[in-house]
Image 1 (cartoon, helix red, strand yellow):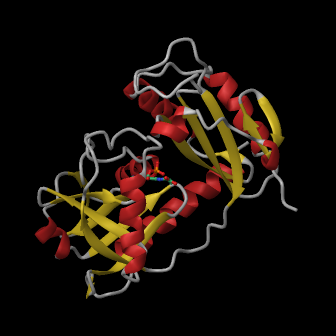
Image 2: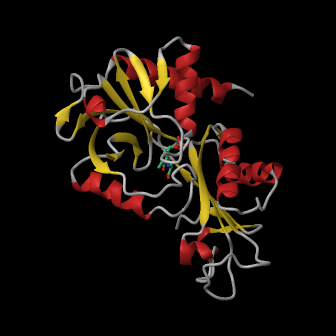
Length: 281
Ligand code: PDD
């Protein structure tokens, strides 16, 4: 049986033995935050950026970081010992209190859990997407484990025969149910600006960085849905799905209905960046 070693509250142990109390506030309230960090060739990709976002999420839910940056590095490094491609899931909840009470309990220790899962990053299949009302709350910039709305929205996409939902709030697009969005409009790569309605994606930032380095025009601005529908290209990004071209939105072709030239160029740049990262000592 596949029973990988995971990390829970200071111990490395087989997944089948990792247990958390039913009084854990993550279980009762969704009171916690998480990160998903890819590792290529056994090396954690953009680790600094993920750890910074973790601190930002922890601050946002008023939870002190239970561990120092060095300790995170050590723990996550232990989990990605083999040199295949993996993704680390890291979750911190406010901990287990003696009784269920919404108010922050005093003197409890956060629960810290981390595991590595193998991933296969092959060239993405062109995707179909569906637009949905963004029914989430005002703290979408924090990577909280309170993901029920995202789960329902992602399932909506699958129920419509699509791979991702494009979320719309007050007539402008925010992000995907589990990804950030890009549109190519008149040759410029555009993505919605950071704010409380979307997660500051690590992959999103890297795409903007690559665009700047390679002279591809890019902008961060609000995108009304009507304009988004007319985009020449649409992509979504995440740490596990990388950079996916959307060729159909609400059953209508995006641009020519095939992955566009700027997506192809950006995808190649992204892969080259990853390869250089793998090869760096
Ligand atoms: N999710 N927006 C949302 C709502 C997300 O859930 C994610 C990623 C992103 C992209 O962020 P990044 O590029 O840092 O992965 C944007 C992860 C992968 C998940 O929940 O599994």
